[in-house]
Amino acid sequence: MIIAVDGPAASGKGTIARALARHYKLPHLDTGLLYRAVGQTVLDRGGDPANALEALAACDFTDDLLLDPRLKLAAAGNAASVVSAHPAVRQALIERQCAFAAQPGGAVLDGRDIGTVIAPQADAKIFVRATSAIRARRRYEELVRAGVATSFDKVLTDIKARDLRDSTRATAPLRQAQDAALLDTSYMSIETAISRAITLVESARARV
Ligand SMILES: Nc1ncnc2c1ncn2[C@@H]1O[C@H](COP(=O)(O)OP(=O)(O)OP(=O)(O)O)[C@@H](O)[C@H]1O
Ligand SMILES: Nc1ccn([C@@H]2O[C@H](COP(=O)(O)O)[C@@H](O)[C@H]2O)c(=O)n1
Image 1: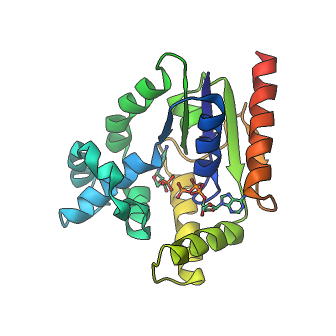
Image 2: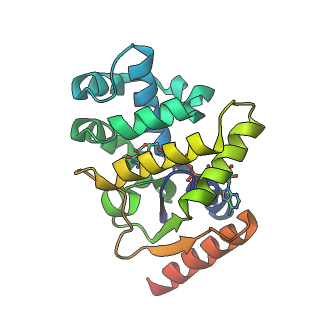
């Protein structure tokens, strides 16, 4: 079974995708990490994420970078949102994601274009959303817990800028697939959101 989980920054899609992977004993891929690794590599090389050639060259990152805690920070997230708009970067990362989705037994992937581009054949698709203020509050609290110095206003501004870039780019923009179920977690606890996600997957399976 392939499960596609998409949604905007800090909507909770990673939390839900990891829980679904545990529940159904499936491997999980956080595809945002791949774009973050490209963005971080450009920054480490002193390059400009908006430069398509530099961003494409940074797709040669090695997998140990995926464990680098810097990928969780705002700098990598913002750079990821810029490099991910280059069609050549998306093309360079597509094969790896499609292969992950196609492995025997299936997989859970989360990102922005899983249900629309990477795995349009997914058995279950969930589009996770929450208001920008609630997403910013959750992300701000997460960063504070991790000891990162920031402010709620900065996190909210970053999230809004990322939403705009991700949903207006020409290639594989963030959008809900026509056959995806919408899960608005704005006023849900993590536990409720996970349990609703499992119910949505079960409904999708029952329809097949
Ligand atoms: N329903 C919820 N209620 C409260 N907090 C939540 C909920 N869902 C997720 N969170 C918290 O919000 C933060 C962001 O969640 P998560 O990392 O899953 O989002 P994401 O969409 O995967 O983010 P990113 O776009 O950065 O990959 C985390 O600290 C997580 O614990
Ligand atoms: N399938 C995807 C996943 C991510 N992106 C871009 O990467 C940025 C970081 O993603 P997070 O999920 O870790 O927040 C995100 O803002 C997107 O620009 C993507 O394009 N496609």
